[in-house]
Length: 277
Image (tube, rainbow, N blue to C red; front, top):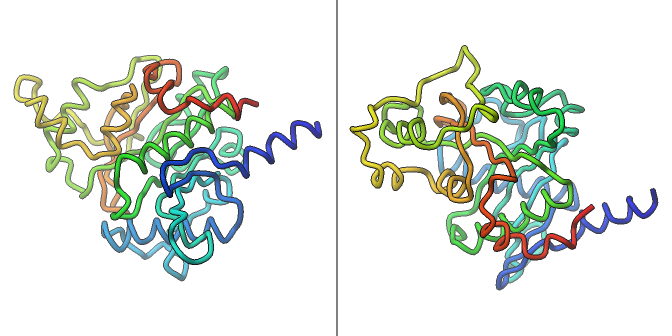
C-alpha cells in the first residue's frame, strides 16, 4: 500500500513532457488550479464571449466539477514570476471513479454519457474537457505537449475510453452545416460506442445530403480541437447540442484507446511506461 501511494505521489508531481521552454504536468496546488481557471476565463469569456451570469466572483471559470478533476497544465518556464503564473494552457481530466463520487460527468447535461458507460462495465472512462491555450501559444508544440500529458495519464490510470464535448463557436448549427454534416456522414461512432444527445437538447448534425458535402472544405472548417481528435482516431456521437452559456454548438467525441492509431501512441506515448501503475 505504501509503495502504491508513493507511485501515485511520484506521478502527481512528475513533469510529463518537455519541448523547449514548455513543460506539461498536473496541477500540484490550489493556487495552480485557480491560475488555470483564470486562463480558462481569458479564453472562454474574454476572447470567445461566454456569458458570466453563473460564475462566482472574480475572473475565473470555475464550477463544481473542478474539485473532482485533475488539471493538466502547460507552463512556459521562460516567463518571469511565480510558477503558477507561467501557465499557458490547460486540460481538465475527470476519471470515471471521481465522477461517480461527484455525482456525474460534466457532459451528462448534454449527452447520454452514463448510458455508454453502463454498456461497458469492464472499461475505465476518462472525460476530457475545458481545453484551452492562450492565443500566443497556439502552436503544434503546445498541442503535442498536452497530448504527451494525456498519454501519460491514460497509461498510469489504465484508461480504456476517452470522451468529452468539443465545440463549434456560435449557437446556430446551420452556420456549420457542411462541417456538422461531414461529421454525421463520415465520422460517426460505431454502434458499440454510440452516444446520443439528451432528448430535450438534441439537434441534428445531418444538415446536408452526402452528395452536397465538399469533404475537403468541410474538414478545413472543423475547429482545431475536433480535427486533432479525429486525427488520432476519434469518432463523434449522434446529434449536437446548443450551449447558450458558452456560445457554442457541442458535439460528443469518443476515443476508445484500442482504436487510436499506433503511430500516434508511439509518437505521443514514447515514455509513458514510466507512469504505468
